[in-house]
Image (cartoon, rainbow over all chains, first blue to last red; front, side, top):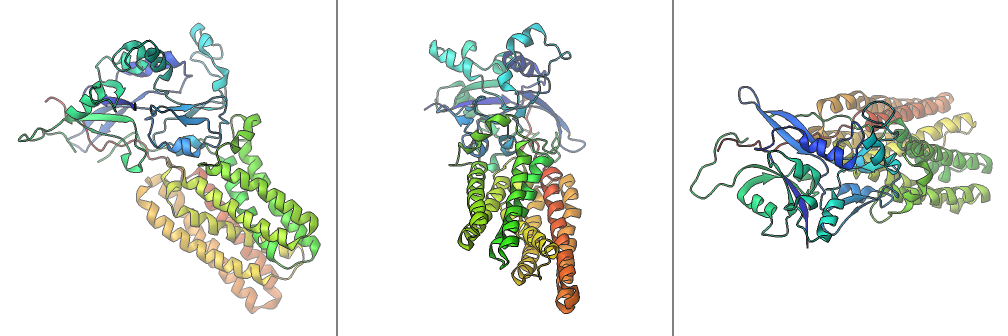
Length: 227
Length: 278
């Protein structure tokens, strides 16, 4: 079995938003819709305040509440863990959006473009009226993953088969791969580093991991800066 | 430790969705009493149709909110896990049995309609409970709160209806109102204590006046009025109607706040911060 997951190394992310731009370019999302966002968070209390950049988006939960609540079966889950939306089935009720603990879903009822009412050439070329009035979210670039696999490429390793945000990351903070493969890039990263998943207590088994420190080896003490 | 960005209020469901919970709950509760209160055929028929009309208006209101209105029939596609689909199926049953009960003036069909109306209210409660993204909705005890709110509203509206129809105060409804407003106050007390820790201050602030009103206007005032009506016979009908208005108003305000004002998401949280420079 395959379980595609994404990893964000919080030590590496510099908040440049290149992943956000790459996602918008690849998926032609309208203004104010960011399937891949990077939060600029200030954490801690004076004098030990830290600034942390946190990539967020759909975490492709193994047990996705959005799919369970969807009345139209538009939201589904593939065998490889990717949660999808069928725009032709979705009725745009917004139930999935209030069920998502990650604020990853968007719904735009009218067409909007970066510069006024008229689309730019690239926006016009990528405009899909089927996405109006329905829920949308990060797809883990499933079309790129599928096309890459069809060519015998390895998602997470070969750029052509890897999500656009991961490809674009200037700091190698974002990674993508198969968590079920013990030899995959993501499995190794998870083994070598301390990690967590956001809102894990809700039991949705998210497929998005955050690295925050090296794994502590026996006999060594953890460095400062944790909670 | 403080983590940003802070939770913000959900904007996916607005007053149109709130109206579905408000009118659906009131209609469901009203049908329950309409089915069992002994009345002449004509008022009984009107009461049943009024309850159905309330539910229908709520559903029409939420239909106005969906992005693809002409695809609304797709709402029936996921009865296996979606409470919204289940609510839709139950609504079809409700209208079928309710209209048949009104047409044939059948007590058996009216009783069946009452059971289906309760199922409809239950589905609405579970719709909120399944919304994992909103701490104020996902608290399990919300089911009881929504259920008893619907019964209190239904009883309240029926007392108003009785007064307008010139009927004597139905004992069943009067008893139902007393039970429901007390149960609703208890349900609110349990719910608010359990959910408090998960709510951001703004959500708590939104709940505070509406919650107080569930106790004061929604429970104490109706109970006092029902006692007054019980003690002074000449005031019974008016007191019961006023008690109904109080119970109804408090419930409607609470549900409006629940859906549109206290529905903050939980934002983002980092249980760990990155350890850099090692």
